Length: 548
Image (cartoon, rainbow, N blue to C red; front, side):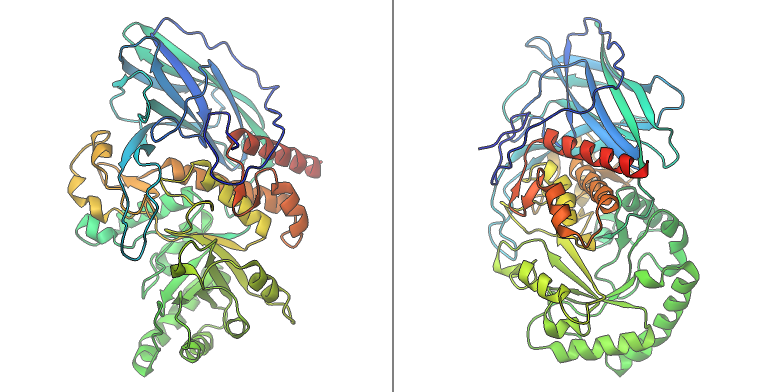
């Protein structure tokens, strides 16, 4: 069984790769540490550090990472006592050594208690990796830095911090030095962080679509409708992580067209206007047509002014039952008559019949139960649809939900952290046109804990469907805080965008060869963060050579 540099075991067929660390040439300032009674253990954000089987890397005084302009990258650092007794941390700080260095942010990583998920009902999830799972990223700004570093113990998450760096699109390429300082009453331990910004860059709008349902059930957590200001916080948060905020299952767009101008400028790529049907067909009868006709006309006019006509979608049906095609056909024809540029979106795989009326197919990457059996990716079905004559003008998206289960990647608590990043490489290798995640803030089961402050709240957090639908957590003001899983998903989307720049989407053979060290197929991927770092380095080198 293949194992990573940090001892994380694979649960898939291994991919063998020779690892060449390629982040030399970055200057490494002396870490300089006093006898603080601490040891520092830096690691990639893709590694699970302690808790539920995660291992710790070796202690080190420095760590190097690379990013391109327009993206974010980060590093974790576990803090352990040098001896056998807990040590009290009095302060933690991250500082740049040069004033022109990219912006940085420091988080404390908190572990939630992942208990056994449901064993009956619609979703039956295999109970894997239960116990403490490091996931919550609590911003340190404005908070007390006091914490206790405990000795390493099996299944317990250590005191860990996450440092993230953001290079803007106009950042000057070069190497930048930062210092992470952990202070105790005895002194300070210091970690030198060397961040290299490459000349390659990513735009605000990525070259594919990416979307997330942001608002489903949030009113149950808030106990009332969200204010416009609260909504904007969520929309900006989603776009920070390269996901267009949408209301997939709503009868009205949320955000509405009137709110889209600043979101467009931040990279919005999908505008979901409404859902028509779920599994059961819902006919747009005369009454509904009279209701929606003027709305569609107004939405079209608004989106035309914003230059977003080509980004408007309507969810025609979500995992539709067979035998009701004619209802969906009539609905699609009426919608197109009102809004000709509208993209009709169907959460199911392509068929010859659907191909005549559907512009966007969204399929789960793989099915693990019969629930998604007819609505998951099928290579033959996708190939037949793409080979149709005349060639289809529609799009093919992938999504993650509660499914799939192992051996396929997903971004639940029981998945390895790096699987979120691998998802982007797999999307690139398959040449899909977009990615969606079904729900970002499933907090309703935790409404009673909103008065408990973090980090104490982490101990009481209800993880539900193994964290499916919860890619962020509410702070004390009920604003979203990221998770390590969300960070890895965003980083995977940004890796995918680099591949889009390097190899045309139609050249699947070249893309698959490029992604092979990371993932050869859906159930075969590396479990070693260093393999992904090496593949990224080669990709950035390739892009910079193209630009010369």
